[in-house]
Length: 343
Image (cartoon, rainbow, N blue to C red):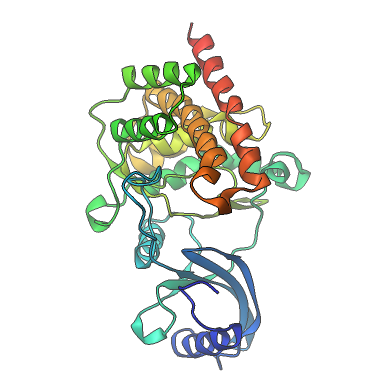
């Protein structure tokens, strides 16, 4: 196990049982504890327990602190939320009405589990190809864009001052950071040079900042046949341009072959309508257009970063990393298609 959980699975079950009994209820018996994911900063486990005579399903997340990185590391200066801050962010989302896995326990020092939380298990689907194509999700597809707009609109109503740990990452800072990452590899890619020149010439100016999810897209949203059930993966949240969340969702990469711009299944008009109703903000189509196009440039650099990461860290020398690196041409093609449409 990683450093944020320095004990065996049996000891984890014992500690977790005491927390459940004290803070949720029941006897604290832990059933079917199984690890879903684990990494350097976070582990996710599923488990069940009997509460008020009925079996309830939960998710445990133990969240470590971020490892330090050198100032010249490509990821230095990138927004990242971890530790207790991530729990606070999710609680703020719940209070704002954002569909969020309900947080039942936010750990404190008395729990003996470090930073993290227990949430209800939210059943549903995240795999885009199923949501885009299977008949049981026809009603979801009809509502998806509007509900996404509503969710993001509620998120953007959170007072940024209530989450002082979120880093500023507006348009100008973001474009400069990704340009620095690209230049850090030491070789020219003319297609990216043109893309960054376009981004710098078209930066949105004078936009009021808000809390931004940072990775709101297909794959990070749990859905049921009736609609959106929960928004996941809050680690990249920041303070920035709110329309960035809408544009990232519309970026062609996250359509997974679907023909509609919003996650492959919905229209921009429905997305904007849901957003304006929930947020009270008006959306300038040109503003949304910038963030949608920039999303392709950003993803191209992220692919480059992933594909080249093995030069800095041997553990990144994987088939998956190289496959993602090879995909850099796809978002660049999408960006140039956008330029062609603009004339």
